[in-house]
Image 1 (tube, rainbow, N blue to C red):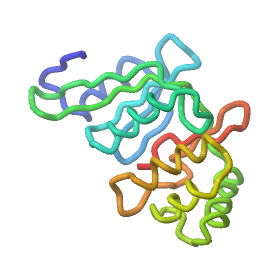
Image 2: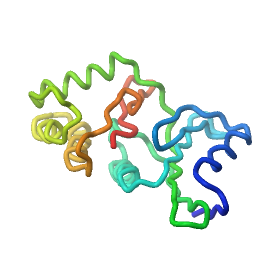
Image 3: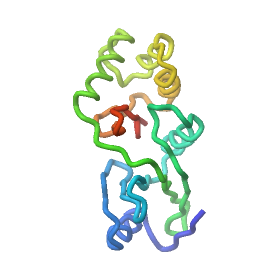
Image 4: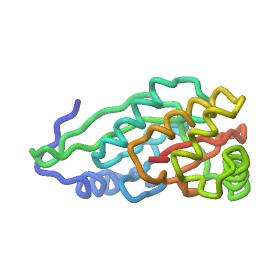
Length: 172
């Protein structure tokens, strides 16, 4: 675990950018950068949130699930000599998710669950019970029990492998 001092999450991200590391994407609670030496690796930095911690732990535990990102390592960093933490995940570099792939998954979940709101845990509970796809079933089980009233299933929280496999990168 790397100890950082006198630095906030925002300052840490700025330091990475100033050092020439290319930003690939950004969300509400984190940023994704190109690894400085490995072209096929992305570095995701996420502000502390128990849901993010639990999602990363689930991804590591479910290694080999085609719907989950491959994680090469996860570090917790402490910021500003306080209780503030962030997670740094070294993961496979993925491609943006095309609208058609995201809509297809949403349509599938709504059809299987019989619900219009595919962000509900109830919808994913039904998918868990009904789907025959073992990888999707494993993800559905996790999502059906996530500590959220609504899941964050926007298109930006999905990516695509070169093989066209849809990957859940940050649904919580």
